[in-house]
Each structure stands twice: as C-alpha cells, then as structure tokens.
Image (cartoon, rainbow, N blue to C red; front, side, top):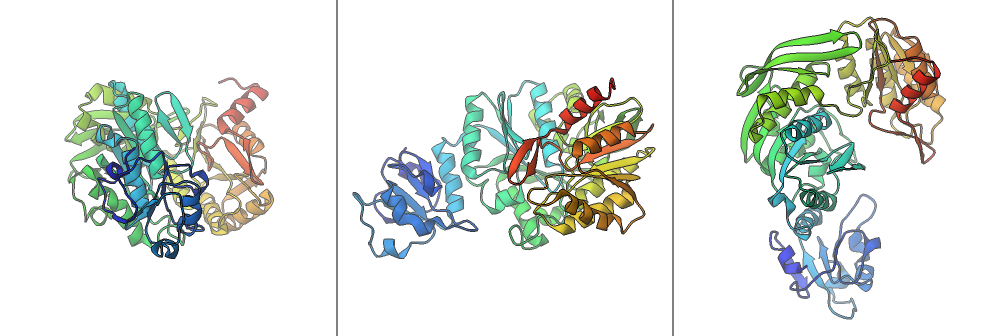
Length: 497
C-alpha cells in the first residue's frame, strides 16, 4: 500500500525520505519488523520503541513513524541501503489508529459502529443490542470484554478494547463476513490510549460512571476518568446517555454530537415506568413499560433495576435501526450473557447464578439488587485473585458479610499466592461484620456445598469468575468452567434438573 495515501487523513511532518512509496506491512512490535514495512514507534510503560529505531531500520523497515526524532536520525547517522522515510507526528498511538484504519481500507466508513462506554453495563448491553438487531436480520459483529464475535467465530478477548490495529482488522473481517453493524465496548483506557481513534462511531452510548480504574497505571483521578469517557461524544454522530446518572452532563460537556437520554425519570427521551420485580421458583426477572419515544411492555429474564437500565440502553439504540416492537420484546426476553447474572437451573426450589462481580462495588450492587427480591437467604460464594491488592479482599469480605446471609469463601485465581492466605485476608473483612461464613479452598467442592445445602427460596451467587473458563495458578491457566463444575456435581450427586 502507498504510504502517502495511508497518511492522507492525518497531520504529519516528513523528516527525511520520500513518503510516496509502497510499504509491505504495518508493524508496531519491533520483534515483527519485516522488509519494506511501515513501523510505528510506540512508547509503553516499560519500553520505548524510539530507542531501537536503528535496529528497526537495519531489519528492513522502509518507513518509521515517530513522536520524537532521536539524535541518530536528526544527525543523519543512520546508514542503510536506501534512506527510510521518517514521519513525525504529535502522537504515535493516534497515528497507529489512523494508519490501521487506512491499512484495512477504512472499514468503519461502511460498517455502522456502536460504541458503549460506562463503568457498568457495557458487556450486557452489547449482547442485548446484538440479539435484538440479529432478530430482524442484521448481521452484527461484537468486540468486548469476553470475546470478539465475527460471523461464527468467537475469539477470546485479552482487553476490553483491543489495540487500534486489532480493532480495524476486526472491522475488516466483519465486513468481509457480511456484517453491517459492529457493537463494541469502549473502555476509558481505550480512549486514553487512542485505540478508538481513526474512525467515527454511528452511535455512542454512556451507561453510568462511578469511581473506578483510578491509579498510577490507569487514571490520575475521577475527573480524568470522566474526561476519557466523554471522548466518545466527540467522535460519534449520535450520543445516547443515561440521563439519571448524576455525572452525565460533565461526561458530555464537550460533545459535538446530538444527545438523547434514557432513564427512569419522565424527563428522559425514553424512560421506564411501572417497574415490577418478577420472582418464581428458580427464576428472577423484571418487567416495565417503555415510555416516551417508545410505548410497549418489556419483560427480561435478568433481575434488578440495573437490568432495566441495560435493556433501556439497548432499546434506545435499536429504535434507530427501525426494529419492530415485537422483535425488541422477544429478543430482550431471550438475550443471555455468559457470566453476567447468568441463571443456571439446578433446582426447582432455589435459584443459582454465575456473575463476574469481582470487586466490592460490583458485588455490593449485585447483592443489594438480589435483596430486593426478598429471598429466603442470599448465599454468596467468591474468592479473590492472587498478586492483587489486599484491600480488595478486605472490602469484598466486608460487603459479603454485610449483605449475604452466608458467605462461602473459596479460591479464584490464586496465581503465585497461597490460596489459604488469600482466604485469610477475606476473613479480615468479614470479621468486621456479623456475617456467617464457611471456607472451602477447592472451588468445585465449595459449589457442591452450596448446591447440597440450598434451601427453598435461596438465591446462590457464584461471584468473581463469570465468563472465565480457567483458574490461574503459578503462571499456568488450568481449565475450569463453573458451568461444567455444576454439571459434574449434579451428575455425581444424582440430582436431576
């Protein structure tokens, strides 16, 4: 591909060489440099590719994109068979996003991309939107925390929002597979690292925001977190936001697009009224009437007020694609998300669910929601990850002790730590409460204990693992899917469902 044409949608300065050349590939990992490629120098937390430009050129790069010009280049000290093109830009991460879009033929010019940002609800909402749109015949790709879905292919995710090159590659594959729409989770880190630059979203969504991801390797403070979330609304055609979130005006203050709102207040463009919790043996759900720009009844097989918000988000998006009411109703009823309040049938007398709640904030929200259903007991099983903050263990222990009737402490991903030591830390948090608990290190045996000791009207929550299908111990991931563990336990115990 011609380098000059790839640069056509971005600002740049030619330091040396001729940009009107063909490049064989687009590379941003110095270990993957090949003859004739375009290399983009990225500065990471522990490594700056600007420091190895001489080697990159020696390995055959025909052009290099930089933020700063190293002395060896400025002084003309590099010797090569032919002078490489050195292109200077203000930000190489932004440049990588723009160049990746060009390399894959600007797929988002054709593909309608829906971006969903927020502290909570992104994953569930993406699957709801995909379910509704596919119910009326659209082919929809998905990029999210759990996986990327392209046609029949499900690719496990490593980041909520992948690197810009991977995003654009996925968009191209989606188009080639016949997709018309892509729905993706857009994380604050994705915006901060310019992974979503280089294209325009058809619709941008804001679900909610709470203090999270604040720290030395993430956001400096809550204001920076909100600023990054708000970046979505300067690169989309339409913004749809949760108008009930007290920070939504701050998040959208620099918006360049039209804004629509949803929520529970009648002031919103779309709102839910007549909300009713639905409880049956082994089943929890919620129903309401969608009002404002919509007017029909909705029932979903997911519990709680946050499920109302998630479904309202999906409805607010899908009405722009002219989806018929009956299709919205049916698709929402059938929408399921692996590891997000995922109900698993084990008994006609009590309910069991799997959820990804893996910090105090998400666990508190989930348990408070379940309390609204007035269960016989809430039994909460969870562990905490090794090589992570002990504060999270104390906080989760305290939340479970305050809100669950019984906590079953077990292993999560112990990594390099002793599982018992992690459990002992969790017990420090529970010790601040009057909550009852048992400790069972083996997660399968802990789940078995919950199932065999379930009582009528109990709600059992298996928290922390969610969609994960492994357990990480000393650097190795061992297969462990809670759905399989449950099936094995039921078979071993002779329990028919």
